[in-house]
Length: 263
Image (cartoon, rainbow, N blue to C red; front, side, top):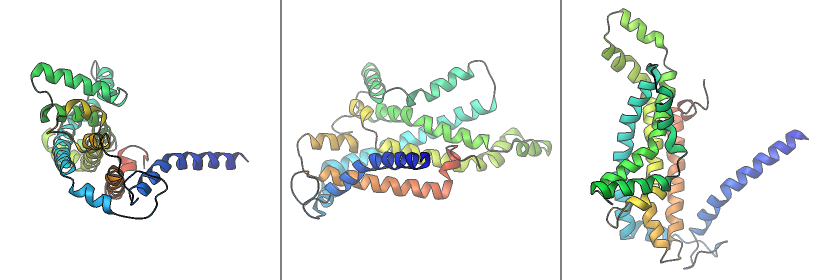
């Protein structure tokens, strides 16, 4: 009886979590001009409009620029911090770790507003620099986590054996540790890229009309129009994200990278 109740609760939670996704997918093929559920038929006209709408094309281009820069910077900085925290015991290590994980608990609108104020002081309001820095701050904990777990899974005896054979610390890092950590770095970068590409709340504060990312462009579009075009974009993002995460799990082993599976 307890097992039945437990699995019933699990199924109910899964249905609750996936139901909005199913609604979005179904409304994206609705042929009418108004968002409606259930759909009155099947049409892919809104996918064509989403792919050819000029504002969405520019916003997607901006998003790719911001995502590539922010994820790469987060990878470099986050990997360095992960290596520092994992390798050394020093005063203030706990505080540094708390600062590194803080973007996970601080509301995104707070970070976005803070970067908006900072950009105003520095004269960089609504430019690519502040958008990239804001996104880097938001996604860096995921990269740091992935790299830290990968470093923890590296056998320290490998480095000691290489050092005993005359390898310098730099060679130990580049020839032994770095190749073993590369899957975690790649997985962390990919997760950061997906999060950055779909980030909306912080982006709303730091983007302008010429630098708006795709989620911001979708928000501006839905304020004026009520057709299923935004549902079509959302459906494409859902499908693309699912495929990317499936690919990353198969290639990099995300369960191990994120310490979900320790084996």
